[in-house]
Image (cartoon, rainbow, N blue to C red; front, side, top):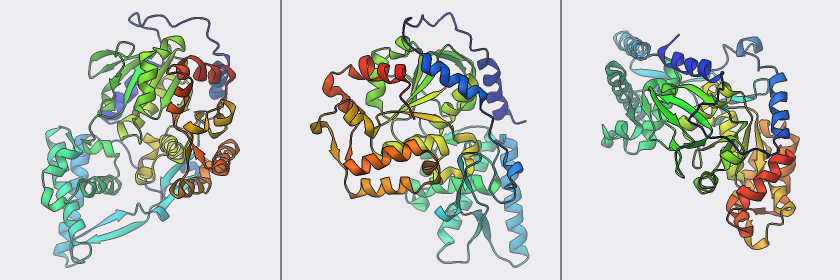
Length: 418
């Protein structure tokens, strides 16, 4: 077992105790969490998803695993030795890269997440249309080899600035990172190239981060930044009854300032829009460690639904790593299209959906994992019928604390999620 994987495993072992640490103050009593508790009990009866091997898909999809630095270093060296042998044999210089094109994406209903089909494509130096991408791939492999040899981590921005003229723009070097992870069979985080901190957490959870004690009830309005090196989080403890996943920073701030997590014992997480890898890894770690439900608070628009799906099924760009990034069975709490009339959101707070919104909504309805959930289909069809969308902040028309004092308490008490 790799050291990185072992670190996460230690946190699960500590987190299963779910002991309330003395540093955390008491949660408010008297709130009705009956529906949340029922949901958690139902989760405990569900069977775990089957392994890919039992579905006969092992040889048909790309599978990656967490690797230690020496293993990544060795894998890169083996790739380069194969290339050297190919050149000496007169076959030329090139890579065989798993294709991450939309046609290679596959939704497997039995495991309820996206995977990447094993379709290899050649990236060769002798091809004029591929020579630059081949050069970038070689350069990034060289840089990753340096990083893992020194047992250090760098940011994606650091990587980009090592050769700005070659990369041109950061999207080029970022994309090649995913190609390399697919090619050598490791998770993206195993490459030791990370994004800057983006997501934040606040609420009723304590943990150790590289040995330092973190109490997320004492992180103020801004919350605790979710570290890029999630594998360094261990000994998770919590008395939370659920995790509240919030789309945007504005709603997160309202929840944090009102100490919502003390009224309704929960952990509040946001990726501040489209989530980064660390936010997705952290959410999955919390879910698998604490075994508590996740309720999602998103804008009532196609983009908000898409973000929720990224947490649940993985993004298409990183479907090869969905096993470590996807967190299934997130419940859609709000703001749902049906809430606009139910909570009498004024027309002045509703926004017209443009053609781009309508097109994205139609694409959602074409997604296999949306189709299997009839309640989600009903909500999206209602959104398209009304041609209206709304942000979480639309609830502020009834008062700036309506979200924390009326809307969320009513939804949680009623178990109003799908």
